[in-house]
Amino acid sequence: MQTLYLKEIGSTQNYLKDLIKAKKINLPFAVVADAQTNGIGSRENIWNSLEGNLFLSFAIELKNLPKDLKLESASIYFAYLLKNTLKSLNSEVWLKWPNDFYIKDKKIGGMITNIVGNALICGVGLNLVTQPDGFSKLDIEITKEDLLKLYFTNIEKKISWKQVFSKYELEFHKNKNFFTHNNSLRIPLEDVTLQSDGSIVRNGERIYSLR
Image 1 (cartoon, rainbow, N blue to C red):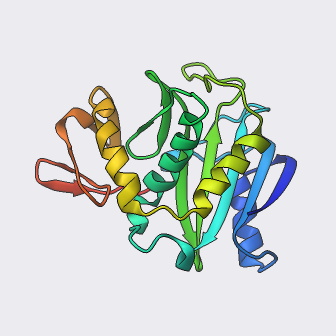
Image 2: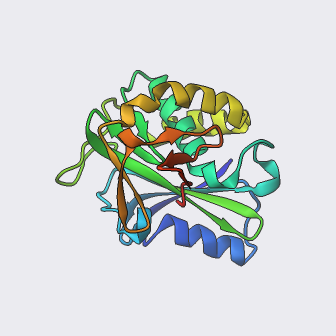
Image 3: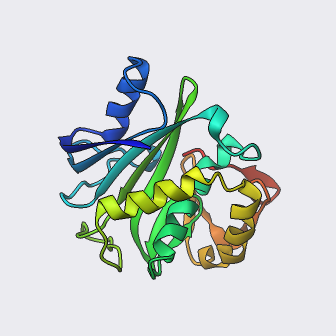
């Protein structure tokens, strides 16, 4: 994956979107910054951007995604691939449904996905070296360059959704003491059932990741 490294940017995601709309790049393509001044988080929140952490956005053409991957679960898929990459380096990171990276009970980052034209854009924020109050950081030391080399290699394998889900399903019990949000509602994850397409069901209602 061709990767552009920047010292500082408002938002890697917005920058990448502009490149795609202007047809200035060929996909797959990634943008990485040492610092962000206007990072984007889940539910249109601001992601606190401390210099030295990982601020990444990458885009892949929809036709090059695994054939059995539903777009509604793309954030789970690509977040789990990153979780597994970190796990292979002896991190204890786990994935809270649908897109948050945790060490024990503290969030260390997250992923959001958007579709622009014929491309899926994944935005990642990960606390590699420091963290805001109330958050934690990665429990291993690794450079951005080394981490992304491993991560992009795993993406290029185009592992099927079925394979990823079979492993994620075994770890879903870690969610039971946590919450997620659906629109403005706070939903306890101990009350939900995970479905094979990555959605959850609570009280008969099916909820998809909208991130």
